[in-house]
Length: 147
Image (cartoon, rainbow, N blue to C red; front, side, top):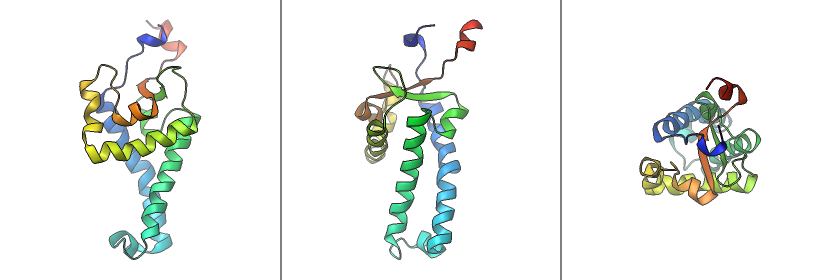
């Protein structure tokens, strides 16, 4: 099976992976922020505006490091999908990871950015287009021998 034949990850699997990551990564960060700044900071962000920024930066750092080191967050690993450079099909670098994470916010703002994979053959969202990445299923040599 050549690299080009590996299927792109569709919208639903990507959406469920993001939900899993929200639970697995953001929840502990939120708890840490609550313990550090007090639960009031979570209810009223005006008390400690830096708490929200720290939460976003920690999440961004964890996700970006995961993408660069393995190409996957825990949610993506569970569904055997990986983020790769669109051209090389190899794991992405830090500038791409940071650009992709920033692109998430543009995708959220427009909503359409997250829905693009539904309409595109290459299943790329706005943040993938910005960072020159694609999300596909993981391919291992073991799977090749089973086909």
